[in-house]
Amino acid sequence: MGMPINSALLRENSDTLIVVPVFAEASVLAEVVTELGQYFPNICCVDDGSPDSSGVIALQAGAQVIWHPMNLGQGAALQTGIEAGIENTQIQYFVTFDGDGQHSPTDALEMVRTLRENEFDVVFGSRFLDERTELTFAKRVVLRMAITYTNWLTGLKLTDAHNGLRAFNRNVAQAIKLQHDGMAHATEIVNQISKGGFRYCERPVHIVYTDYSKAKGQSLWNSVNILFDLILR
Amino acid sequence: MRIAQLFLMVIILGLLWFALHHRSSTEARAFRRIAFLGLTLLIVLAVLFPDVLTEIANTFGIGRGADLVIYLVSIGLLFFSVSAYLKFGDMDRRITLLSRHIALLESKGDMGQIDPEDLPKV
Image 1 (tube, one colour):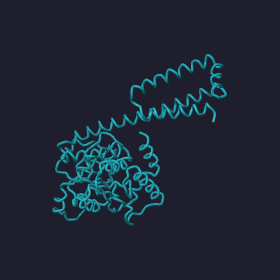
Image 2: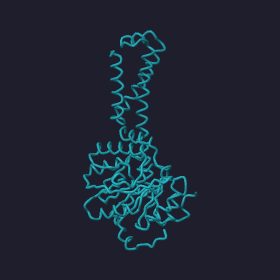
Image 3: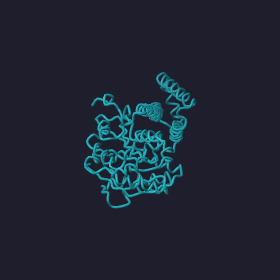
Image 4: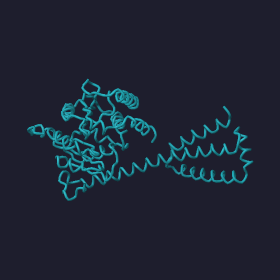
């Protein structure tokens, strides 16, 4: 905000779609979309049946908005956004980005730049590759367990499992078919990327845990639900 | 381990496996109906001939007929819970597909140019 718009950068990124799953983020969403808009012209917010005015706010802040007729879960919102991007043939790169302000647009920019070098099909964001992200002990333990399980299940070697910041190219987007509506989709994405044999890497990203994102974020108890969803279906 | 315990364990695990792998098949539907009829019949018999039930229980090494009924009801409940859980999951997935389809249809062509009049009232 207040920054000069870098039109060369925006033009360069016109082949990139930022998919932001949104559920009741009215208080922070305008800022998130505006900041993203400094770097990326195509921002697709999928309003997942928010009870507040999130979708309208995203629209006013310059995002494109798809409205789910009811709340379906973050996995479903991501899938909707990705499919909308696939329909637009100019979109070559996709970024999934949380709507609560915990991700940094410059991290997303770096990840898309990595994709442009065409060495990798997928770039996962990881908060464990450097020391920037501060985590509570309990959260660290649960995330470690989650990544151990995900790596065991998928055969990939990742350091962060449930990070909403990822970037991938069109081929990967077409291979992603999320069936888990809820939060188990994070493991599901990794699994489908593993099955597709895509080239992947991780980039360090900075997660900012504001009071808002902490209050909004998942309770650690939800890891029990995620595990249950993944096993019993 | 007594034969009754072994028997019940096999039934419970078998039902779980069955519920997980054949949940929407014809066999599963037929099986559910047979189980339903069987349980109904058993309850009627249990009311009419309490002694017979106790005899059956004894052959399995279970003390009372009532205990046998409790075990069977437990199995039935577990089976019902699992199949209901899975069925709701299937339904959720269908609702998701339908809703997402509607969302994409509605957004098609006018992405970013939605008429403010069409926005949900907040």
